[in-house]
Every structure is written in C-alpha cells, then in structure tokens.
Image: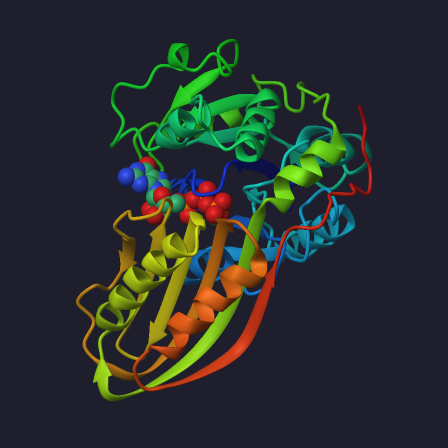
Length: 353
Ligand SMILES: Nc1nc2c(ncn2[C@@H]2O[C@H](COP(=O)(O)OP(=O)(O)OP(=O)(O)O)[C@@H](O)[C@H]2O)c(=O)[nH]1
Ligand SMILES: [Mg+2]
C-alpha cells in the first residue's frame, strides 16, 4: 500500500522533549506494524538529534543551515526523499528557537503540497520548569518573547515531563490559558499514545493559529542565542569509558560557561566508542546531565564526540569556552568540524497569513 504519509509537526522551546517524544511515539507506531520517519532541523549541520534518532532505529532526514520556514524547499525535498521509504507517519521537529511555523510551513504544506503529505495539528511542547522560568518577572525578555510566540501558534500545547512535574496546571500560566492543553511524558510514555491518536484522528484542525509577529523583534530574540555544533575524535591512552570521558568534560564545560556569563539553554553530546554509545543532555546551568545509552560501557581508546550547545550570549565567547575545555581533555583530540554562530535573521520562503 502506497498511501500518502501524515506529517506531524512538533515545535516548542529548546529542550522541551521533542526528539524524545518522536522516539517514544515512533516505538508505539512501530509496535502497531507501521513505518515511521523523522525530519530534524537545525541552524547548523552535524546534529546530535539526527544521529540519535537514526541510532534508535528510526529513518531520519534533516534540514540544516536554517529553520523549516527559511528552508521550506529543503523541507519539501526531505519529505519527498523520506517518502521513498513509504512511512505512514513523518515527524517533523522544528528548531527550538523558531516560531511562526503555522504561517510559513504548515499553511504552505496544506495549500501547495497536499498531494505529498497530510498535515497533522501543530503540537508545541512545553517543559513546565522552562514555562515557570520564562513567565517569571525576571525572565530573559528575548527568550520569553520566543516562548510566548511559540505557545500562541500551537494547535495543541503539550506540557511535557509529567513524570517530574505532577502539579502543573495551565491556569498557572496566563500566556497559555485558552489554548488546548495536554499533559504527557515523552520519556516514560505517559499520555503519548493518547496524544498520538488525537493528532492522527483528524479531529483537531491543523494550522488554525496564525501569528501576528514583528520579524525584527523575532530576529533580535533569536540572535541573543549562541549556537555551537562540533565533532571531535578523541584517542585515549589509557582507555576510558564514555561516562568517564564525558562526565568530567560536561562538568567543566558547564562551569566554564557559567564563569563566562553564558546560560545553557540546551547542551547535547553524543559519544560513539567501540564499547558503547552514550547521549547526554543538559537543559539548564548546573543541572546534572540526563543520560541515555550505556553508562556501564567498558573503557575504549577511540571516541567520536558530537557536541551541540545552545546558550545565551556571544558565539565567540561560547567557542572560546568550548575550545579551552577541549584542550583540557585527556589524550589526543582532533577537532573535525566546528561551527559557531548566532542564528541569522529569519526570512521565510513563503508566508500565508
Ligand atoms: N524527566 C523527563 N525528562 C525528559 C522528558 N522528555 C524529555 N526529557 C529530557 O529532556 C532533555 C531534552 O529532551 P529532547 O527530546 O532532546 O528535547 P528537544 O525539545 O528535542 O530539544 P532541542 O532539540 O534542543 O530543541 C533530554 O535530556 C530528555 O531526556 C520527560 O518526559 N521526562
Ligand atoms: Mg531535539
């Protein structure tokens, strides 16, 4: 059967749980015997998310070098490429600093590419802790602006991490009141099957909320973030386990960024070694890294690391902190790729208001 896939768009702030939700939802659909794919998106290349999704057994393509709205043609090409594998569902994860996706991505897909995919409602994921931080009086105004706009255009607002936050109510967040709200845990799976069935049911209309947004303000807000993607090869004598290499590196990096006045928004790291695979994630300064993979892998001499950091502040400061921590790593380190920048001003290819 070669039916048209359903594209499920996911948005929401950095670290909200989008990639984790894709993997949990993919497992549910795969258990039903359905083929699933994902399209990841980033302002740079060398994406932790793409590696992690592929490593978890889900076909994945990516749109790099800009968000879905600025690279809309590439999203269409990626959708065509991945459709060759005949997935029933394609998850599309937008960049976590991006907004105005309904007008610039969903509407164009619905109006001009209905022959290629059916578009599901736009779920915007919200980490309750981030919501508390970004709706507080002293919140960073740029990040608060992005967060607010993301919520405004959601067809469904999904509070995530319900395993950690059991007392969340949308009433607490005036910005969210009025939206259709769901609660789920991408990590434990609680609420995910119900969400999935709802977005696939056709009962929620997609792309109904079109933003009124000042693009200069939006550009300034995105430019307040620094972005770093880099890949490294590390050769160690004596060998170390992934946890013993990555743990101290992340602690030092976190401390170095704090000392430089930068705040981590999302830091992701993958270590591939012959003894095992490990992914670590930090979504706020000073937080313990959240680990997926083999914490108990045995020591290995060769490690391939992929690091993606999103933090507030200047890119040159971020790069210099990261490079000085890389220089302190044990063994011989080869930096294979290094990209560091602030996101460029968003210029959507199309916008249908
Ligand atoms: N406790 C808990 N942690 C979660 C849950 N969902 C995601 N996480 C963790 O939150 C961190 C960020 O999750 P991701 O899925 O990478 O978030 P994201 O929205 O894809 O982040 P970006 O791609 O940077 O925008 C990871 O460490 C996850 O393990 C959840 O339901 N509960
Ligand atoms: Mg992600």
